[in-house]
Image 1 (cartoon, helix red, strand yellow):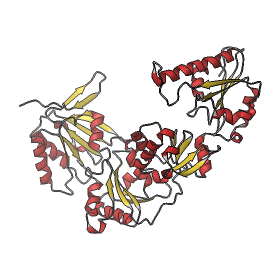
Image 2: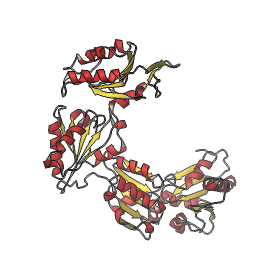
Image 3: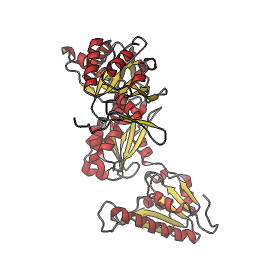
Length: 502
C-alpha cells in the first residue's frame, strides 16, 4: 500500500514463526536489520516471547517500543471493562508507532507465528495500514509447527481443516469438532477443560493430540486425554489430524449403526452431528441416490442399493456392525419420518442383533424444508400422512385423511405420487374437498434444496395431479391458513398460532 507522504516511515508486520529462531524467514531477518524501531507486545511482567525469538537480530542502536498490555485475563476497573481497556491500549499503542512513522522511521512490529493469524500485530495493522506504507512478512504458524512436531499430516485430499479458538462456548466447539475432518484448537490454557469436554462430546477425544510450546524450550507432545488441565499453558494447541490412511479398525469387538438423515438435498442441510457420524463411519449403507449426497472419503466403503430393499439393507448394516464396523445408514430427510430408522430398529429388535448399538440422528425433514420455503404453513397443529399404499392399504390412508381433515389440521402429504402411483393425489383432493374450501392454500414443493427446486402455491380445487411426482411434498392448509401476496410480489403462506374459539 502506498503511504500518503513520501517522508513517512514504513510499517512492517514481521512474522517470527512458532518459537525456534531458526524458523524465522530470511525476509524477517532482513526487515529487522533495516528497521529503526523494533516494537513488540508483552504482558505486564515485561517478558516478550516475540523479542526472545528475534533477540540475536536486535542491535543496541535499535529503538525498542515495548507495547505492554494493561490487562490480559485479570479484571480491570476501566469504565469500559476489559474491552474498553484493550481498545484504549490499542489506540495508544498505534499512536506511539505513528509518531515514529511520521518522523520517517521504519517500524518493525514483531509477532509470534504469522502476524495476521490470531496475532496482536493485526490490531496495529487495522489502525495504521491505511495511512502508511505497510508490508506484512508471513511466518510459520503454530498450527504448522504442531503438525510437524507430531509428524502427522493435518489434512489431505478433500479433507476440511477447521481452526478454532478455545474461547468459543463448549456447545459451539462440540458442534464444529463433530462436523469437520481435521481441526486445531488454539488458545488452550484456561480453556483446556472446556475444549476437552467438547472433544469428548463430539466423539473425537480418542483422536486428539496435545502440543505445548511447539519448537520452543519445554516442548511437550501427548495424547490429549492424558493431559492434566492444571499443567496447560496458553501456548499450546489441540490437534485432530488427518483421518486419511488412519488405520480403520476392521475387527473391533463391537461396532455400531448410526442412522442419519441427509435432509432434503445436499451438504447445506446436514447437521454437524450428522457430518461427524458420516466422517467417522467405516461403511455407508443406503439408497444410492442418498449416498451420492455424501462426500467420498478414502478408506470408506459404500454399499448402495435400490430404494425398495429397506429390511435387507438394515440387516446388512447390522451384520457389518456385529463384526466390528462403524456403519452409517444414510437416509433422506429425517431418518425417523417415513424413512430408514424404523426399518433398522425393526431388524435390530431381533434377538441376534440385541447387542449391536444403534443410534438415530435427526435430519431436516421434507415438510419442514418445504414449509420454510413457503412461509409458515405448519405454524399450528398438523398431521403428516404418506399417500403411498405400498406398505398400507388405501382404505387406511383415506380414513386418516378424513379424520385429519375433519379435525381441521394442516396436512403434510408425503410420497404423493410416482410413476407407478398416479391416481392417489386426485383421490386425496376429492376427499379433502369434502372438508376444506376450494380456495384452501396448498404448497406444492418439489426438490426443495436441489437443482430442480420449484415451490408454488395453488388452490386446493386447482391442485393438478400431473404436477406431482415422487420428489414432491404437498402441504394442505387448514381453514385458518392464509396465503398473502406481499408488497414485493412474493406470496407467502402461514397458519396462525391462535385458533378461534367456538
